[in-house]
Image (tube, rainbow, N blue to C red; front, side, top):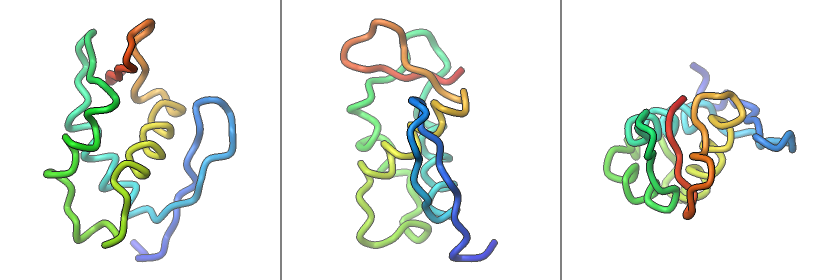
Length: 98
């Protein structure tokens, strides 16, 4: 994989996604899918950054990376692709794998 290869992310509301390095995307995707369960209850969105931080391979992420920013971008992409979904009616927002 080319170190500068980029991926165009998708947005669940049909808005324009952002282009990010594929390596960063893949690392965050892997971490998110490890912590987001398949069960009905799901996981609180606000907990994701804290939960993925210890399992991220920081050598695959930029030193100045904002974990929260990457969580949001990759979470939206996974929602748009139908890999994860928001738990209907849950407040605060909860997510689960489809």
